[in-house]
Image (tube, rainbow, N blue to C red; front, side, top):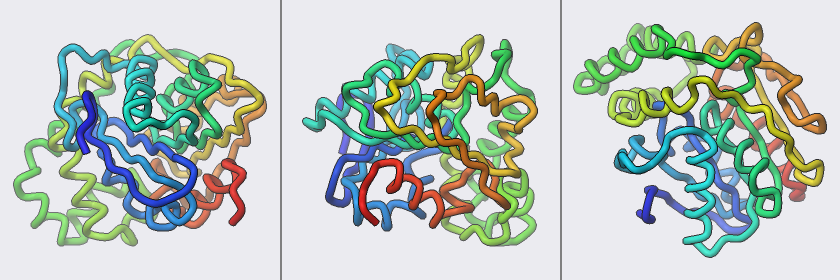
Length: 265
């Protein structure tokens, strides 16, 4: 479905749960966990501007606060008042901003490897991230072939997941194409510069933050500052897990989303 700003999709039944992907990703990133979660929730997946099926609009600010406000507007268009929310990386940061700004709308938050938890905000894009984007764009035409080989998947995903050998061809291809086609990648990067998450979230909103012990994208030494997290947040570090816990630890992530939402298993 296309709303005014975003392409989105709704599946399942139950209390609404909004899933927000990361920078250079797309709603396809949630494929591994949505089947189980759709048994408990009405799942709303969305493509951020310039990602997936959503066009990049010059009028849309790409910082986490602005994107969060626009996403709340999307939920208004669906007629959804209160909802649960989960996001990965950049999407996790957006989820935290939404909970801070709209406490009466959010029922629970699960942030998977959220960005924004750094003491010193970035002032420039990281060179390695820029190179990854350029490479994904250059190789997107041959990605369906390259990723059929183990060496192709290793080169593309060994830094993302310690379990890269277990990732399916579909998961890898979806991710590679999402990055290669993401016109909103660099605008989103610009939206993070000179910013961090440092707001309060109401203690009435259950918050769980999950990082993997092998996160090379947002490593513990620079990007997992607990003092910036809500004081009441549950902080979990999953073993043998990288920057996409919803790939590496499907049962645990589903269980934490369900538990944080207070829904019976």
